[in-house]
Length: 103
Image 1 (spheres, rainbow, N blue to C red):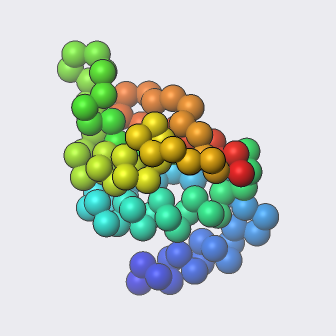
Image 2: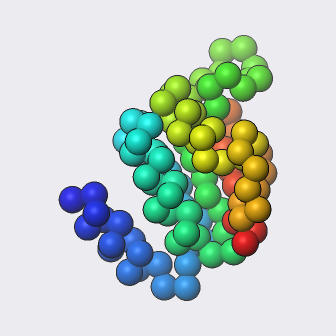
């Protein structure tokens, strides 16, 4: 069923999405697939927002940092841990990271 969902999302994307919010299956391989599949559907200037991905970040005491498997997937693909010329890290709000597609 996952491939059908991706096909439907791609067909519906038209000229590209303004924003995609990834908050689904928390397995590293599934998060990786979500990023790899949805990022190309976002138009230049649009935003990718990923939930639960700031483990190990300097957050205020008691704040939820996220889920390690999600953090691992994001760290393997996106800034600030990976240099990319097509997407930039903007900021995080607690356990959520916000990116902008620039190319």
